Image (cartoon, rainbow, N blue to C red; front, side, top):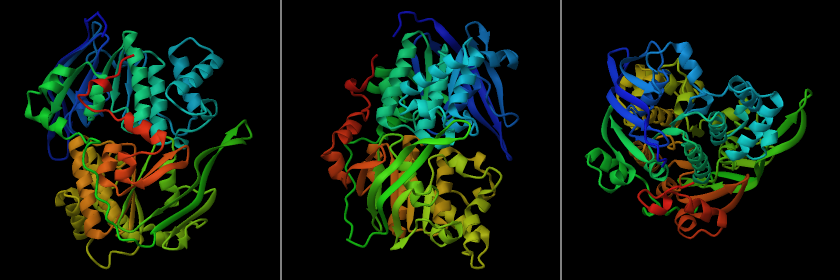
Length: 546
């Protein structure tokens, strides 16, 4: 910590409200706190506690007219951020106060190449040539761990994995060296080793007298990175204190529950007791390569080998975990199995039938048996559709309604995932992140699939909701004999839910076996490095120092 301890930001009596169809919800209730110069303040709490709304309120990014700041002040270096004209605030955003969003595609233009976005951002805030900005962009992509940064400057955001997009957005914020960084769940899509790299960057920025508000549900992250912690529940601050004091002796019951809910590698592994059956899905020598194009004629100059000569089986009724760093090819593997990405070579068979080379019409009979739950439930749900229409759309397309009223079917699906019947008439924006993920699970169940690919399906959820969703997935598997491909970077969660584990790096499998064996007795040094990087809350050796 810096010796200078003056307050850089003083928030007093902040209250924020949101309008729904039925009522007005108080999202932040009379909140006061300080951010000292050079410190990292962690704000932790469950989904819906008000932590993200707090961060967005400080730079007035609350959606209007749904949301409204009804009271309070936010004094930043003598300026009340909540009162100044919006044109003046826009000058502060980015240059003096940087914001790292939870969902990177909200900050990245999907139709503009990453390099151009970096150059435009730098030139907007710095007197710098295009060539200098381009070189700086390459350096920052290196710093946040983007492989082949020179080539990836020419890529569009949709050509990156979720974790790599997050790293790009972090680079866009850190390269401007703002005085305050508001980081809203910035590492939920990142594996533990990449998290470590990002945290080291943030700590270096902090040493240069920047301050950070780090919003997260992950107590392990809080322990690694923060100096001070504020705990929020139901729009209010329930506890605040120095990091070690709060972890050693939390005063409030809610804080104790949060600490107790953290999954740990010391937890007991799932017992693997599967009958030997023919594979449900067979992947053989699979390659999914993406071309790298340059120049005005878009000449192919190389390939990103997202999946490279990979083979595996998924058996009926099992959960196969796929783990590895961001960019290792995990999500691309899942998407290729589902036909959402085109395989370059190799074969994928479902119950003996090859899925390679099928067009949309030919793939349709298999589609209902192979479903996916995405990492980001909000972007995968049509904001203009009610939950009723979302849950029954696939059933209509596949002719599965059988004359039953849509409403009754939708209600049954919601009950399966422990949501209320009257929710079918609401829209996605009216739900918390955990509730939206349950809706995505219900949608996947609607077609009665045999395999569900869970692509980082619980990574964005707080620990208590995460535990509930995992228990729900296990229960549904038992009831319906489902198979899961569970893509994750969280080895503690993997240990709890999976029967077997595959470890991926650079598109290839380095190690695989029963989960208890892979995690308890890893053979490959890469697997060992992943396990060593998992933070243990309260353990002094896990604290990061730069």
